[in-house]
Image (cartoon, helix red, strand yellow):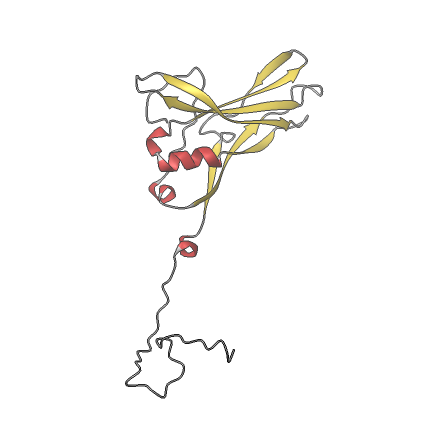
Length: 174
């Protein structure tokens, strides 16, 4: 359910991003939707459009295209389709209040006529879901190198391998 009671004339799919996701480094975000079987053997190309919902300061709600894909529908059975929403999800992670959901529309064409097709209902077996992959935080942390050797020129004159000595390079000898 979207955080605001919005109406754009189409069902809005809202994907709440948890604090854990918001504080992670995202690798990618894939919207997974279910499309039905092709209505006929001559109508197998479907155009899928994903719109993000936004609201202006005056309170008017709009939809703007986020992604558009053409997919081939199966003739005997429906199936799932993946749509990358990585860029849009990155925006939502930076500004969570702008996440008002998405509208997904799909239709097939046969010449000049086109037919709207169902993309699944939220909360159902065939409902859309957003899969977000994040990187392991351990890979992003940098460990500062340090040495437990404490040496100085006065106390350790015979020590040749101390990393704390001033660096001297003899280019003639090199």
